Image (cartoon, rainbow, N blue to C red; front, side, top):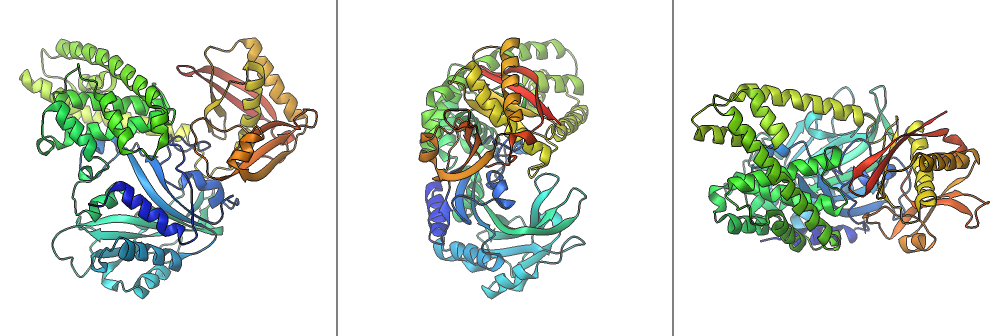
Length: 589
């Protein structure tokens, strides 16, 4: 069996030999991306470079990136859906193009992994009013020996990537499929046949979408590829179930032991528990803590679902489910050193949330008993779901034991309405889009650097950034501090930021090693991994004996001079989590 570590090593080493530099996985919490709660693809941390900024390590990059996607939480339980997953990716930032990219992919699959060419099929962009048919990719595949019968041309919904937000880089993609059945693969490729599993996607960013919705030629042509580790491992090992790969098998074994049940008879429940606890451990290692908003809400929801389904499996309340499983995650993913470094924090966070939710479950059971003297309405079933974490199937099962019914149709209507409201809220909060490097967002971004240093000077040098989120409307900055700030402290911070803005300080970008940057006093984000060479933004200040006011490791974007920021104003100061405070602020002309 090909293991997870073997696949990652083979991939990174292959591209290293093709002059790519291996970069570390970025945090699951995007540093400066207001469009998403989590890093959902390997390209997210690279957006400034996809837009033309020079990367300190060159034009060819490769890595395995930790990702979280929250849209499929309710789908987890089948053989392929996951909340946390790993994405292998290689990038060309204005360097090689379609022929070379496709050639590398084909060579890796057929020579390094030794997959038979006869089991491969390809899809390409069919073309529309925005962009022509991608015959260039087709020619590249045919030149490598792929039959035209195995190449399908599909519309934009299938073979076009991006932009991730409203504007930005995008373009056609070519997807690679692998025939997973033991039966002989058919001569002609049918994309609707589920035996063909997509394992790799090569995106060719040759366009930029404008605010007006038009697609214009990009200033820089980029290649962005993605290969899902879990799905590819299943294909390589002729498995129809991703949860049978070594990405999940150790976790499934722990659940089997704790529940004293076999996986074969309890696949759905065990998949949910394994997926959710793995994702939770990864989130906490990157600084996320359970809460009722944003990333913390997703974490809390995952843990509650995992606990509910573990109880359905009969795992005793006395058994420390999440703590035991977190140890297995740490052992299975030892290449992510942050898991070991945060071991105590992960255990304490998981245990506290598990204990807290047990009390909520007990209250929920009392609520169920109160309403279960008759058939349960859709509204009551949704109340149990939203307030107490009861999945619909759990409510239905409990109702069946009492020989009463649940109005499933009404529940689904209430749930659909809830989803629509959640999406509307998210689009409002994160409407700026991944590629929003607008003038106002850029001003706010530089303002966070001034705010970071002002906090340290007013509150103490122990203050460190714990996260940020920037939209065109406001900045949000999280930092460690044990209490609510006083009005006097907030006034001092705001005054200091505005003084530095009015001082017309130069903002300068330099490239150096991480070691050099920290030696010079540059601030780094808590829990973030950095490559060997990084960008440092310095806000110069000749009146300061250091010669600068702020120095941070960052990818941008920034104004050239602080005078371009405008007037800084703190809107709100509040708690973000235990020991973490949050400031929301804006700038005006």
